[in-house]
Length: 321
Image (tube, rainbow, N blue to C red; front, side, top):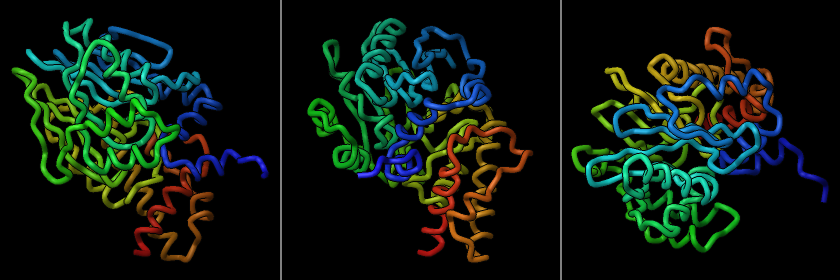
């Protein structure tokens, strides 16, 4: 069998983990600087795989910094604490990542997480979820049924502890938001779709902080592997709040309104170019190879031109029904 090329690996993989693994292998210094922007708040813990930032009273964002090759977490996540409950966000790539976040939650709040919320099924967001259930606690895992089922069916390597954690998950509605009372603080788990067939945003109103999962990537071109592009566009528009808000993306630094709007504008530019190329009869491969983002949108981390092709392929798939 011939060796699998870098491009083949990306096109065959259904997870953001492959995207980031290859990013780590060859990221230029400029892209590393984009990823590791200034923290949005005080850094309360730091490891090679990421930093934990206090972004508001009782709310911390874990910003993963995997470009050195450490795949403990890969995705961003966080902690939201109330008087009698603590929510951990995301299961990460390895159990060690989930356990690390749980230990930081106990140090910061006095409590092991009581709840865990998963934003979607990709391996870098769920494969380590069993780390929360090791030893010191038994949090309630919350997930939509599609997220649970796809994680069990597709994510490799298989793991009995992860499977048990997901099979015991409290199932969220795919149509109606759920409210989680942590004691003096309510968190809304809002079903959405676009990056995958089932995404969830985790939202706090006061202070205004939104954990977006992979519906938002900051300064990094997103993975369109499971994307229905018009649904992603609409979900991003729905996520944008009129009042000042901090957005914790699936990947990249914490975003403010300017970074959020730049991402939305980038998605619109991809849509415009894809619709034009499709109408001209240009193949997705050729259109992706020729595509560049306008300089007005600033720098975007793009580690392989195949990501543009993947975005055009997703748009063509939708335009062709």
